[in-house]
Image 1 (cartoon, rainbow over the protein chains, first blue to last red):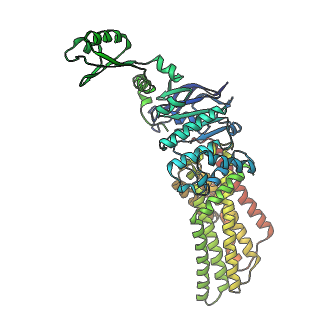
Image 2: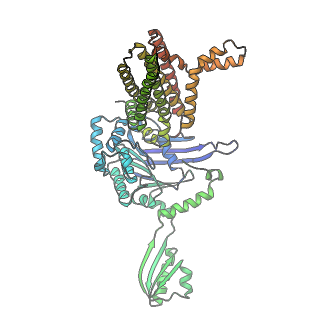
Image 3: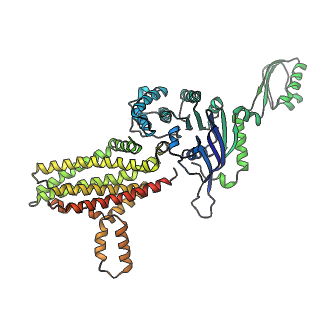
Length: 323
Length: 254
């Protein structure tokens, strides 16, 4: 069962000037998010992440294509009862106190007053704002606002949680709390779809990721699958008591050679040359300390896709802005 | 409470916590005080001056709140992006518009009630007879304010706050002049001029129909039929504008 399905989703904005082509924010984006998974939606600023989220929530109308959430067309009012949303850099009604704020969103979601009161208590504790329940949001720090924003997204216990850059503005402790919260949501069978450009968070918690560049989905799948598909491996070898200076064999095999006293670090671009290099170390009577293979990271893939996207996307797509 | 009620209560709460509203009520008090001062200076008709100034102050404050809070009702939500989390909830865009409108209406009702109470107190203190005509005038003022709020809300669904303010103020002024303009060009021979004024007359709200302050200040009441007709006209006009605002808002991208 897929909780989010988009098919050939496109959004373009008129340039405002006759004769100029429209600005394309999304260009045929198709993706699926399965029930109960954490899906990381990756992309640089202006790639179309927020536009996609806005279409899914019915805030923006797609120019063409289809989008379904929880089996219903995107923007369906009744379905929103089952969806929680946290926008990027949220600004909330700052004249409300934390508990009034959550109460307002609980009632908007159709919860009874009794249930709302109970959920407000639970969520304030969950996001660590129990002490600040009677404080107005205008007195909250950025991190506290992000946490109360998360609480409003969860107040009605939604099946699908959509978060736009949920780690923004949080310190390392806050980021870990949000990561743990997202993982606990998955443990309770919820689906989490979140956009981010912080790759480390994605690698740590996501079941699957999608990478969007210039309005197009350029890669999608499990992190380890994606990295394996298109990786550039390297191998680091640390050894002692060998002479690298003037050694043509070592310099022809290695991409980097660092000699510090008796110790030497040699970086090979692939594992193919490991045997040859180890043989050379032994021939010189050196001592092998470690052989560390480095798999390509999501970051490598991300930059690779970014470079590819720039070279293959038409000029009219690369200019302008994406909201 | 339904979604409209939740939005309305929140809009009302926002207005109450907005200090501008309190300042305006204070301003109304000062204006009423000024009317007393002017009445002391006038040799005759001081009853009329107090009633006149009081009614004018209530009207002015009401219209200012309706206009300036009205134009920011929707625009502020969009500019501050609070609309994202609201529209992600199971609430239709029309309900949101209606909720905002009723929230401001509630605020205006409370404000006008406070101003009316201050006004009546002033009249009582200065032994000015409290005529039923004064209540009629305030009732139609409230209807006018409902129309002005609807105008402001309508424009704010598709233009910036500045343009909404200009358009609302323009329509308010025209709304008070169309009847006079029509009377002026009635005998003119210019066909185009007459057609333009006729178009304005039927298109723009006839706010002068809701203005009975002059006669109310001297204690002259209007017929109940007129009150009903004028109120219905104002409510209908506001309803049409609200429907338009909902339709426009339905199609907006955020």
